[in-house]
Image 1 (cartoon, rainbow over the protein chains, first blue to last red):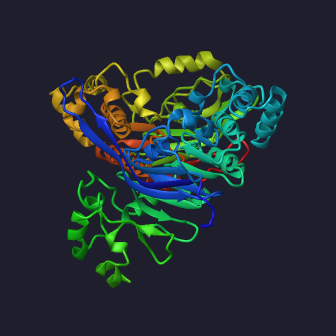
Image 2: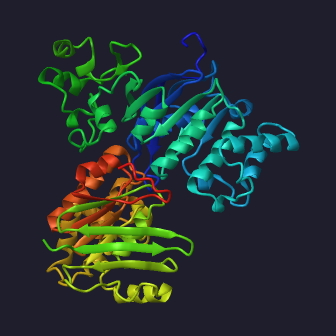
Image 3: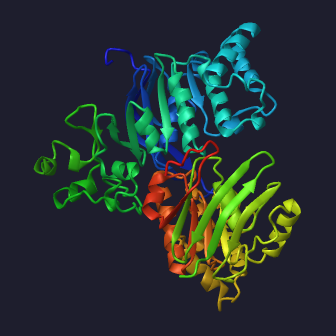
Length: 321
Length: 246
């Protein structure tokens, strides 16, 4: 897999938003939404971005799609530089990089049927002729289980059906990257499964997918790799089919009932999770308070954890083995 | 312990099929009863029936509803069966004084359920006004409730749009407990929250209800939540007979 060109390659990504007060003379506040994120998505791979609200996962996904510019760092898509490229030159490439929004109802035109949504996308972005677009749209909708709902308007569809229309519209373009921002939020567990099955089961073979989600069962069940984020950084990168999360915060995220609930606020220097951490031992605490732990490879080098307690080079980690 | 609500053999019908058939729910003071089941199983319908809100036609076909802590004998559903919408509307009017006082409802989407044009303090004052006994100092009582749900006193002057999702959820919870209800009905209070916040909100809901000695009827999809906090679980079957995952 490693000799293939990654679909997405993100290096040293930073994003700082400047918030100003209500008046011209109000002081400005810098919000550091993303603070040094690196990752790759390989063709055919589904990567989950998980974390609490405000952890920076949506910002990262928006930067990958070119909807935000990074403050620092680089984004490469299919081996070509993506950030900083003028929109006029990005425009023709955008069709390969598609976005599935959270709010399906808001993303659909209330006056267009399921078929018209997909057909129009194929005609405008895919450049297909009318008849061809119609055939392909019908085919895609049927594949997603909407074969009998071609002429339904958004308000006549259930929440799950509306989402599948947004998926059909994206998948029909055969993109090489799909970024889905909480595509199942607000659905009950059965419908969540069917929406994810429609998305991931119908991705083109060489497409990569970034799934932004709150739902840890989704990350576990559907993704090849999980990136857990806290305060704008990736704190653990893990393939849950082969390993369990080790970072104390990632463990809380995956099983919030396993220990005390983090009360916050997060630390501003050193490890952000330190105030709520139950794993930091005396030996580590001083280091945890002063340095931000880097993502350190574990026994399996694809499993990386940003925690001094689990850093193989740290003395306490060696002790605890 | 006298039950707060005792619903027996509830059956609600749509013209062509039974929406809920043979459901029993009991909630005791200071305890949590969870209502679980797949979508379409009638969880929300059952919770609404507990509040005497019936708005399906022909509607109530069978069932008895008692609030033993209020009146040990009275069956509130007496005479409503088979009476269609008219009888159900009469029941709704007759029980108006109970809603927001004997029991309160904490809705699914907190931020959209709050009144966007009124401050949290104002909305709390209205909720406190539903109590039978007025507190000595309204502002002190508002501060006490805000403390209880972990919101800063400054939240009193905030409009709902100035609160984050988690804070709005806490504010909705504060408004639900402010009338000092005997029973709180919470319809999926964790919807849309991240896992850590989800636990915090549910735990807070349970703690506040226990502190006040109120019973809690909780509708939830999340098996892990229900397993951890429910004292009693009522499982509803889905339209095709399957049971919920919880």
